[in-house]
Length: 68
Image 1 (cartoon, helix red, strand yellow):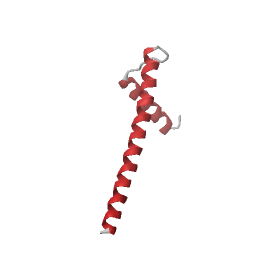
Image 2 (tube, rainbow, N blue to C red):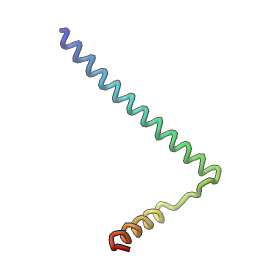
Image 3 (cartoon, rainbow, N blue to C red):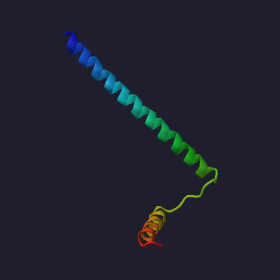
C-alpha cells in the first residue's frame, strides 16, 4: 500500500511540474505577443504581408544555396 501511495505521489509531482512548465511557457508567449501587439499599435513597427515575407525567405534561401 505504501509503495502504491508513493508512486501516485510521484506521478502527481510529475504532472504538477509539467503543468507548471507549460504555464510558464504560455505566460512567456503571452508577454511576447502583448509586446508585439503594442509595437504594432504604437507604429514602432510596420506590419508585413505574410506571402511577401515567405517569398523573401525563399529567395534568400535560394541565394545562399547557389553561393551568392
